[in-house]
Length: 211
Image (cartoon, rainbow, N blue to C red; front, side):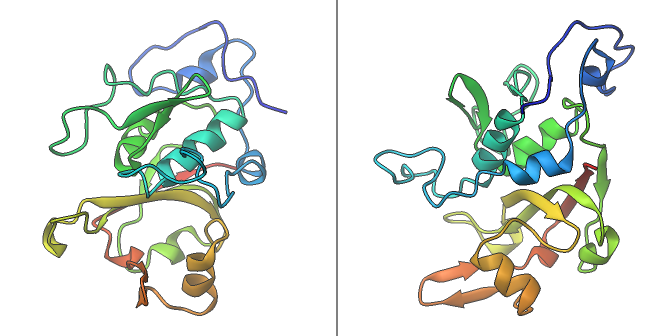
């Protein structure tokens, strides 16, 4: 059952406050709702004939957006009026799925989450470093890794690629990289076209606790 994340504003005294929690009748989202509704299908949420369009192969932010949609979050404030485009991009990474705003870049979604737009999602906690796991062991929420993988024509020093996911006490959402990272201990991997980068090398790691 989607939670109520819309209502009549009661009070919002300053920018940065959790506006949604100041509204009449708003119910905070819970981590269980996010985890149970995570879009983990093999078919990408944004697809053409079942395949990700060119330029949208990495859909972690889209998957997280669709997950929020499923629990009642419309993401109405995710717009260029509120969030600046990432890096040298001229426009915000934003599409519309099922009539709802949808983030396409993890970095910009993390910036949006820092504005505290959703009741139940806590403030950003900086956990950057190789020991990031120990800082949030046993906790639940949304995690963002920034600037750790290279997009086309980028050097390692100028890497801008990010990732956003759910964190459930000691693991991310289930996929083949989660198994290799957290069960077998391979922090990075590159074999026969299958590759992923080391989260510990991310220049920014943010955690948004959701209980």
